[in-house]
Length: 265
Ligand code: SF4
Image 1 (cartoon, rainbow, N blue to C red):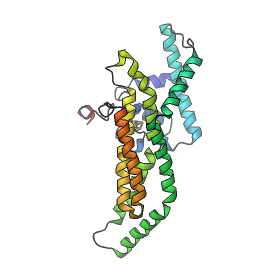
Image 2 (image 1 turned 30 degrees about the horizontal axis):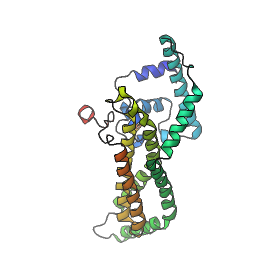
Image 3 (image 1 turned 135 degrees about the vertical axis):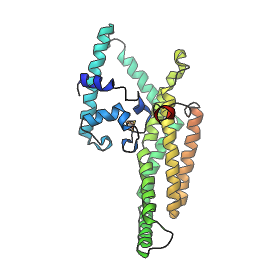
Image 4 (image 1 turned 30 degrees about the vertical axis):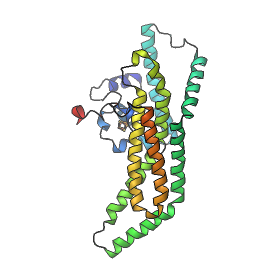
């Protein structure tokens, strides 16, 4: 995509500014696809299903958007007499590395990474429980047992698994972004502004809320796994409390579009 097309697209007032910064990137389930610039760019690039892109196609899309954006930025900087090359890039790089390292060592980031691994391990070890459940639902179907709805039940299980899997890595990623953005807190001029770190923490908290609800669903369906699932829920619940303590304003952060029902229904 060239910069003129990107500019034209970005100036369309139907798009909600920055909505894609605080979403869970699950476009397939998003009700704002027609108001999201990010989604529109993906469509224009011919990627209707961005989450399923091959690594090559994804890299090509990102690189095209990056080039167009970078070209635009250079032109704007030139107009304003700003030298984008100025500044000690090594020092900046060092600061960024340190910030990332500190964030990675934070107990919330550690707990989120532990959760990511625990989910993988749990699914690796619980195949038999899903198989047993499948057999049970098939029997209900064949025997036409009254007061059962095996189709609905299997859809609910699948939905819970999809929710858990979708957020499995995202919780860590969003927490890292929130922790790395905490430097905003130190800038006096930004004191009363909504903080990106709170927005990212809120996305992580919502991902945790949805994941806990999905695990609860699995817990009622896979009775053999009750204890192992309970351990995971306890871990997630603690992470949720710790994150809320670390970002006390996160829950009240207004995400563009999603938290503006009076404007967007
Ligand atoms: S706001 Fe919706 S459509 Fe846009 S990137 Fe996020 S999930 Fe996808």
